[in-house]
Amino acid sequence: MNKSELDFKYHYLLKLIDEAAEGYTKHGKSNIYELQRKAATVRDSNYTFPAKIEAFEEFCRKEKQ
Image (cartoon, rainbow, N blue to C red; front, side, top):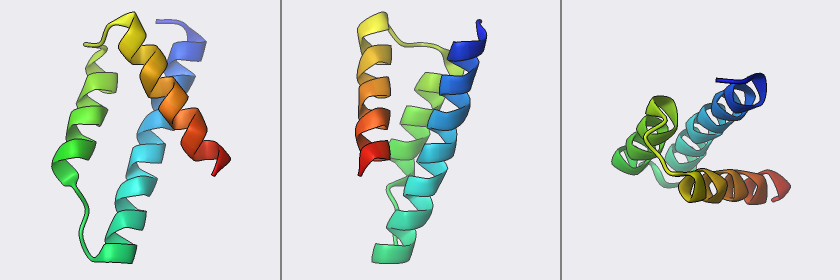
């Protein structure tokens, strides 16, 4: 695993934590199962290259908001 992939995973997982906290703060709940699924996919590297690109694009879109 190269440094850029490690950086992506680190920042992506931190973003998931932020989303969970924000969702809980705003709505009093958070979809922990969806967050868990996304985190496991990135953590375990069980994703195809297109899925990796999609996850990164989603991450970038949310960063711009």
